[in-house]
Amino acid sequence: MDIMQVAGVGAGALVTEMAKSTWDSMRAAVARLFRHGGEESAEQDLRLIDTARQRLVASSESERGSVEDRLRTELMIQLAAFLQKHPDAAQELQLLADQTKGTRDGDGARTSVHHNIESMVVVSGGDINASGGFQYRAPEQSR
Image (tube, rainbow, N blue to C red; front, side, top):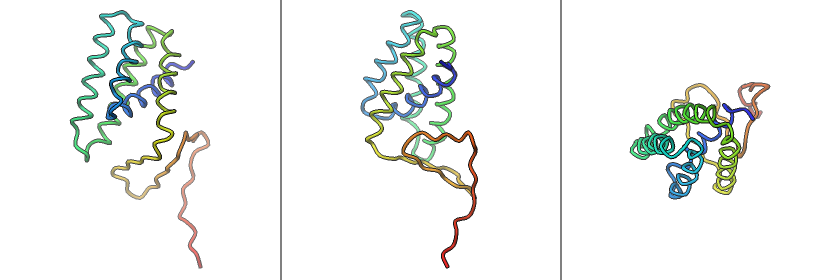
């Protein structure tokens, strides 16, 4: 299991859930995850998560997208460091992320695009594999 990939997926799930009314149940699940490192460590890690959530919730609508992006990066680093010390927790984090993805599937598509100039936006109802790259071209005009 690739720790960085699991950390990235986990960070994305956390940021997505932070602004929802179901955050308390997600926080409880994250607390259980962090207990792999012991109670004292779990409390420290949870404080970082709580601080991140406060930043997100306190952000204005206009800055929300950039705050989410920064939090995903910060939380990915935090989770990757945690998983380096406690690799046995990787599967639990992956399951947690999968569960939140399952609950999001019925929510419909949500898109947030900021500062998009002269580029294309790709909207997908699921995962996108861009390993082959994207080729952008102007849409064909009807004649």
